[in-house]
Length: 465
Ligand code: ARG
Image (cartoon, rainbow, N blue to C red; front, side, top):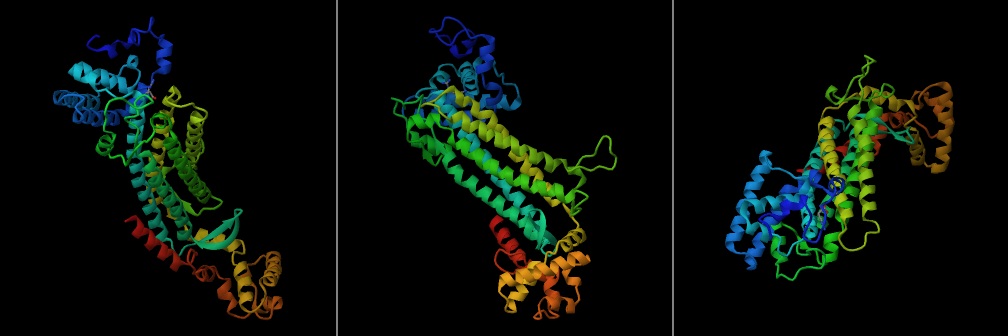
């Protein structure tokens, strides 16, 4: 065996092969140009494996020291950008192992004892994803905090609440924003939950059947901070459900982002004019000098399709795969990487953008006055005076019909006109018909009254601290 057999891959895989791969096949099967991103996890996993091999008496203390020294140099080379990634060496694992052997000789060749790239790659992806999930958790907290701040400043600002995009009832703008905080809080919960299933150790599964070496898998798990060891070697090397689950949670998160994006876009359009986004999140037009376009939320809305696409890609990749490892699984990386990148950029930019929203309370209130948003309040008023709800509903429908014909709001009808619909209506009806009165009346847990909004702001702040 040559000093560095792995380096000879450009010729043939091993003595078994009578010809080398064609250039096209080499390019088709190689993953190094995207999976080199896993290098830190690969080194971390190898060091934990080597430490355990030594503790189990499978390699010497000198070998371990050589491996540690070699890996330190490789790390430095990669960080400095001087490491030479070779397509001939297919993937991140073989590239690093070959360099190690080049640097430290036989000790490097002993590293792969009791290990296969199959359990190695599954371990690397899990380690890497775990770190990314933690970063995403921090970014989700930042976004929620930014939204809670804007919600607090707008606890009293009246916005037309819509159903079917038709004016329904007035809501506090702060209440509206806190709906998104709830969504993002559940997204964060999902990440925390699925992290438990990401955080399990496949290493020790070897190629598929486990290994005949007396490895201490629990020790490796402890070293790497995994909370459990995969209990079936076939499953450990082959399933990518943890990646699918992550991408599913990421898709839901992006769906929430897309809903917020859609609203920001609508609110910023001249027909609504409810908000303005800071210039740094918008672009102009090359032909229409008056334009300021909400490109960032539009792009985020578009990128939601991209992330959902990755979910479809990954789940289809897994479908029908027989046990155990199949090369199909190499295709898990690019969708996963892109999902993480898209998510992190989007969360960062949305936290900043939320903090820079200019709210236009007069425009919101004007719009809320347009659609008879307090009609339900009039019906409720009549119910409190003793009318059955269905009758009250009918009475108010007549009043709204007449008000529309007269081109006025319900609150602009004189008392004698209102009394004609029902004699129980008194002067106090005007408080009920006001937007503010309607808002304040919904002082129930989960409701839109400013007092409730402030209570929710306090709850979120305590939760996010
Ligand atoms: N680059 C491969 C992957 O990403 C590593 C595992 C290769 N295993 C194998 N038996 N060819 O899945």
